[in-house]
Length: 130
Image 1 (tube, rainbow, N blue to C red):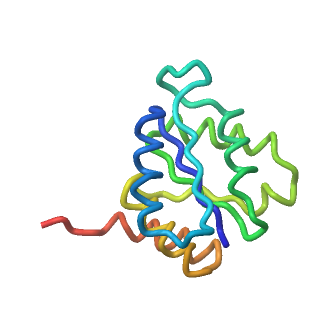
Image 2 (image 1 turned 45 degrees about the vertical axis):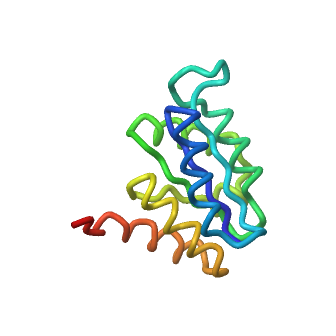
């Protein structure tokens, strides 16, 4: 099952999105929040992200949801701390963090591939709310 990592500048935001997404996930679904800095401050921490990726990995790949551009940079830096095999099976979704994470977790819970999970998360960009 594809794991999902939520990377936010805020620990509270990442944990809140994780909590919401798990409400719709299969019991064994891996969802890991990697929000904020190690000291609890606002920001993103590449080491925290790399640890979250390792924790979320079940062998089927890891989908990463990010909130802002610098979260992408921290996540790309985190990739450097991963072994080549894992790095090849981790993708950042170009998706809204909340809607994308929930969509990704539901798709991953169905046992879908990393490619399908990323596509579903990215499809959340076009969801109309009105």
